[in-house]
Amino acid sequence: MPTNKNPFWSCSTHTLMAQSHSQQVTIAINSEHHTNNNKRSFTSMAESSTNTNYGNSNTNDGSPTANLAQDHIFTILLRLPVDSIMSFAMTCKRFRSLTSSDVFWESICRRDWGPKQVDAFKSSNEYQMLPWMWLYKQVSQLESVSCYKLSDPEGDLVLPNPRASHSLNFVSNCLILFGGGCEGGRHLDDTWVAYIGNDFRRMLRWQKINSGIPSGRFGHTCVVIGDCLVLFGGINDRGNRHNDTWVGQVAYHENIGMTLSWRLVDVGSIAPAPRGAHAACCIDNRKMIIHGGIGLYGLRLGDTWILELSENFCFGSWHEVVTHPSPPARSGHSLTYIGGNRIVLFGGRGAGYEVLNDVWFLDVFEGSLKWSQILYELHNIPGGVSLPRVGHSATLILGGRVLIYGGEDSHRHRKDDFWVLDTKAIPSTRVRQATMNSKGLLLNMWRRLKAEGYRPSCRSFHRACTDYSGRYMYVFGGMVDGFLQPGESSGLRFDGELLLVELLPFL
Image (cartoon, rainbow, N blue to C red; front, side):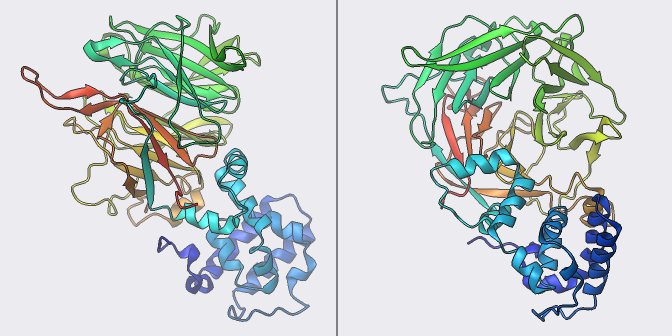
């Protein structure tokens, strides 16, 4: 079992932590709309816990907890960080009983991972009524991933052509691949669909969809909203930038198999400037956000736009989000939705062609979306490892964290490393202050993961997506290092591998 020095799993630290966490319980109860009697009851319990013998598992009938209903305590505990919960579990028998229940830990997983990931995980073949507290611990202490190759060019299966700067999405239990660039700087206009179902490790049968729309492009974005795909922008092989918006929907027919229909969205007269190599993700159930990219004349952009779609996805309206501060202009970066209205931006190539490693956070503040930069400490990044990158993938995985893979640095050295960006401390000012050093830098935000199994080539401008549980990540294509041929200035080539990256392979 992986080891981790995180104090929230160390029983020896719970006694020391309980005193500092008692105030958080008071904050949690005051934020709830409960009666004044209940507020005073829980506040007095929190204060009295600092004078309790924490090694004593007994509690007398006069304990303040006797005055609180169990569902009341349950609600309050769900508003606290996990380390606070584990600390208060040591203060009395009633807390310990409640916080060791499987129902409670499933609720914690739903809170921290999201209900969609938990429901998808429960419906998977691998889920065998494992304890939720144990699962939470394994995900929190994740130290490695397992890689598998799912494409066999020597076999008789029809496969998509090698490409980069395409789109790859998971929707309706299918992988959807569209467009991209290929050898000779040409764009592709093909759409491919592969049904996955519940067998995540099998070789996939790709089906090519001949629709003729959208037009061929690379450097576009495509996000999943509900059961639909929303595509924006891109560049064709003549250098023309697009700013059109398309919606795609997958359907299964017994006679003809999978189909994917695309239609152009009517967005009116207001739209972002044409661009490619921008970043995008969805927020809520009807919105897509984009940032940056390469506009006309190769100018890098730093604007932020939100698309709000109608219920039937036939119409949409764009509006620009103007805030200060905001991320500088860039391309080849990533936007990742992490729940609520929260989005994380990482990396890319700046206006001066520099490769970046800054992290920005977009959240709702006083009713409006606001950007804020997250400053972090680099002490836990090994020497010789370069964190700045462009053309990477950044995907939300099981546990509500972001898995960053590959990309290239300022010297165009491609990467094959996996990093977890822990976003859990970012939304809360209280937690952020507790995890900062004296210089105001966020601690322990990055963790490098070991890669086991198949060793893929270093790559950049690939695309990645996860299944609904966030446990399986699929990676296709990208630019990889190839063999240098006579007369060639570089051995760069386009890749056509489909990779599976699995979390918790031992389940």
